[in-house]
Image (tube, rainbow, N blue to C red; front, side, top):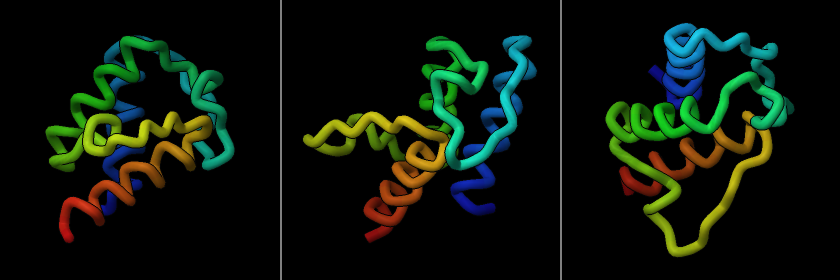
Amino acid sequence: MSTRAIVIENIWQIAQEQDKALAPLADNLVLLESGLDSLCFAILVSRLEDALGVDPFTASDEIVFPVTLGDFIALYEAATVDAAA
């Protein structure tokens, strides 16, 4: 399964578990407008670390905060490539 698919699947699962209504998931969706709250994002980052074996927020000295869903997915895609290298 691709990194993108894993991220999207986990977002849907967390939204359902936390009873959150999601905005349509598109690359240009601003994360703050996604329907997920800070607890949901904390759960998401934790689950993605388990699923992908990386946490891009702690793996680098340079902190990058994604603004859109596309940015978020790209951050994880780059981190998984870097971890495999």
